Image (cartoon, rainbow, N blue to C red; front, side, top):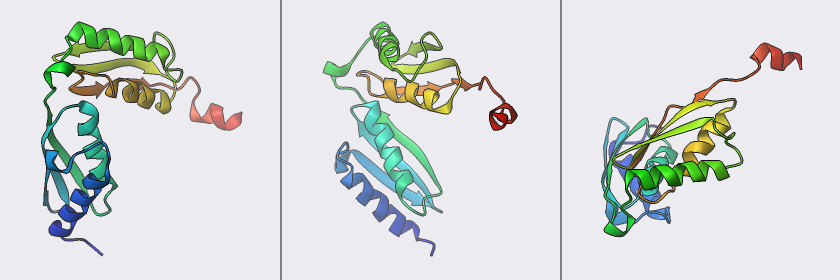
Length: 157
């Protein structure tokens, strides 16, 4: 059964309400043809990401446009060098991300990750690690997954 846009909106709002990381009054939801648009203001990138994740969990959602803006409170503001240093340190401590494989660039609170890793879980772990850092306004993950072995070689082993 295909849900109406109104039902999808209610379901997404309910999902947002049940996510402990979010406050219901922070995010507005609009739906058109199964495409959910999230709007509003949150005080951390991890909340913006949590809202997107929650919307994708709702059955019937075809796509999500995340227009939620991160507005950091004064106490959470960090300079780009501070964020870059924190990101590098966090990645050094992440056991899933091989040392010296990921390069970090920060501009206006937005982190860009670049480099090469062998597995998708390593790429995902790098993003997850920096997502929670204070002062982050967004992330672009440009890490390339480049397996050492081809699928044929793996199958043979």
